[in-house]
Length: 280
Image (cartoon, rainbow, N blue to C red; front, side, top):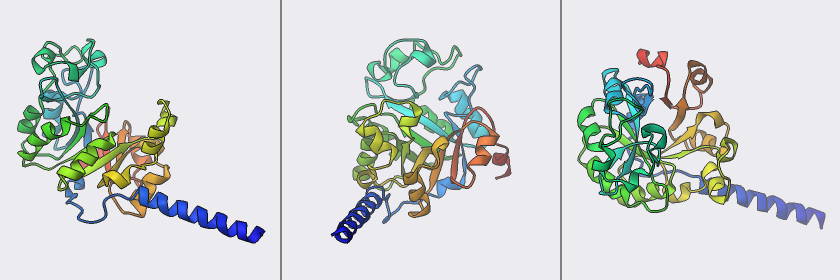
């Protein structure tokens, strides 16, 4: 009887393990070209300095990244009147010193604010694409605070017309699901972290996101994970078992970069210029 109970328990554990591996499995067939990741270093929100004349997600910061030959990561939201703009936070407080959310303003209203007390203003995605013009690859993070992903077709319309190398990523699994259903040719990445250890509000949704349990739905082509939590099993399985590209965010020192060299293929960096970037 004890032996039968042990067998049932082992079978149950094996079944759960199989279900877990299936749940976190990324896209395995008809995978798109991920050669843009041959450029391993991407400037986080451009090559920026929030205390200078090229603050984050500004055209000045993106121009500096292009001139340095660096790939770049940027954040895109859609305004109240349907204009894709580049801005990270959902609200304006930290960067513009104003109240309200980006999505609650029209583009013209947003032009009343400057970035980090510089002369730079919130740029349109169209301006960034024209500036880069295919010279360096882009990682486009799509910001969507809720399950409403009506921003996706608006952003995608601009990306369809762009001829340079780019991919999209998002924390929101619904964004990736939209691209899976509508733009299967676009490389898509799941952003994640260990949200409990980051101190975020913890519930079943954050648990699922931490452990990449939405991958069965979104089928990402790469995982972009907080480098502080590289040991997370789901992230490691996706890279080592499923052999998918892994991106580290956000590296802020040479020491951190060296510490995770063997764990990732792509490095999104901030606050310093990696010495390795000049050797590629």
